[in-house]
Image (cartoon, rainbow, N blue to C red):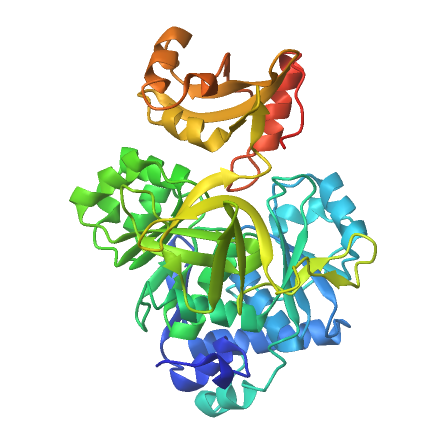
Length: 491
């Protein structure tokens, strides 16, 4: 069934429970196998959870920090917060306890909940809730009627969640969204990647990432099934465990699958690739497999996808989806539209939301890009990664993409090292097998200007990856400290 955003004034989950109560809403791993929960059952579990939260004192506008891997409990908590009017704040369980305590103080979280394995991360005791798969469902004589009464109207314009940005530019910012943002994002996404009742999308991205939360909202609006990853299964084993139609992956996840078990990708209706640049070689490997792969450009502040295109060797990210607008000024990308977030929680007051827009309502992404003659977006890199070498602009992502295309190199980061004569000289951090500097110089200079070549190649340091995106700043800082390099902040 098609929806217009104006017609949705209730929780998409409860809306679907009234329209298709017996449709499978979620598959979760339980006692060594997948179990299914239909929309009527899931809606009742969410209702029970919201009643528990209410009895514990959680009120509309309260910020609830939740720490867990993707789980049934976490999905229930998200929808319960939507119903109750509380603000769902999922946190990365790989954050150390001290960082979570700093975030809690900075953003004034009102309540805490953590999965059993993450209780020690909480800065204070968390709420005790009955959310697991063994929890009894409320028994009613007419479950369909009961579900309908639960679909109460809510304010879809109020803050409903907080997602921390990746922190690529420093301390993570707390981006606030409303349900209208997510609805517009989901409806626009389906114009390019259709999603229907009976389809099944793996929640392969964490809920503390905007891409994970987008999957949850897309599935509920379409009446599709959401599959939670099975613990202790590899990505390849996961894809063999249950039939899927839709899958979201970042580049590192796709590389592992193509190397270990490419056959598991066959039969997909859509493979959505995001989280950064997608290597041309990966796309070339997908073409003969006949997999409908899509590349996208998105960001937390725009509720996930902004543009989407069928994966192509030209590296295009496509045109803006419905509900989004995009313009480029001096190679810098600006965006606005229905999916644009409400703003960031203020550093000065956690009860204020600031929205850094220009006079016409445009948000500066700090990403660099240009449009093809057909109007499709090409990403050039981050403005805050660019630096100047001897008066010439150097965009690290251009050099990194070339280095990654060299056989044996898995990952590459380029940054500027302080130099008295040139200001900053490019250096490269390399993961994988490295040819001699002379060989790499010759390879790069076939395609780029000689002044852009790295003057030094450094092995990848031991840095823990806590998020989906490459921890660029941490890797560069680790190398600078280890090798005693003087670095400057990018222009």
